[in-house]
Length: 328
Image (cartoon, rainbow, N blue to C red; front, side, top):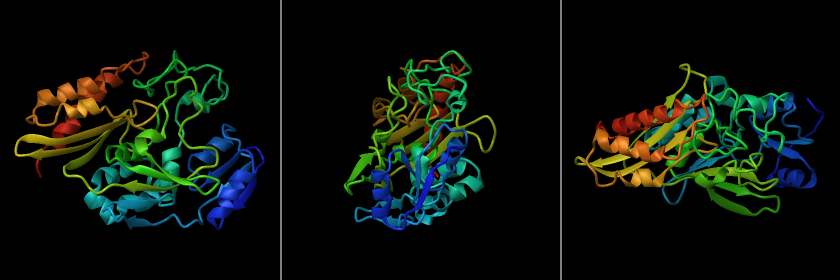
């Protein structure tokens, strides 16, 4: 691990000043991903700003009827909150499907959204990786790419985003609240937070240098049954091969609302609005769910080892939509 300076920020202004005044500074909260990357010298910050003591650890009800989740709220705390369990069960299920209990006790809401890919080649400094070292190439393109993206990838990068929580927040239409080093705040729709790789896979989010996530805003609960399905190689502590967060509202025998987001298939949680739209006003049927799944994966591209993800994603969408459309 490379030497670095350390700052424990007691006030927000101190944290922002530290980020503004020191090149290559990083905020650290739970550190469950950042410290691993520092040990491997993939991340080499010159200055760490500990933000654990900032007042961002509350879950508050908003005037609009939603929830404001502080960036320091731990994943286990969020999953156990009774308002999340009753009104946003898809989020609670996604959180409990991610990582181990020990990691969930430490990982924060903001850090979960900013965790980096688990691509094997990103972690292996002996291999080319455009995300780790721009211009060096992508070893995954023709390597062992079983875990990699089938949607939104490029010839520069086929890594996926690993967060389960982000997939659930995407189907809920959450937004991310941030503050930059000048103290200016903004809200970013979570669907816009993460970038597709294009020719610059090393730039992963819309955040500016030194900009901090302070909270996530959940809108008021929407009608419909919510669920999260995660397909992985073993029953626990494994990243998704494919995941689906779904919300389906059935009135009578007609679909009055349908939303779903995919994980494990792209560099960001993936939604296809046209696949959701074709379900509106239709009767609940296997044929309609198959059609929605086909549209959602219409632009998917396999790279050999990950070809299986395309039919797997279709089947998982169909299963999730069918389960979410059931009464009870």
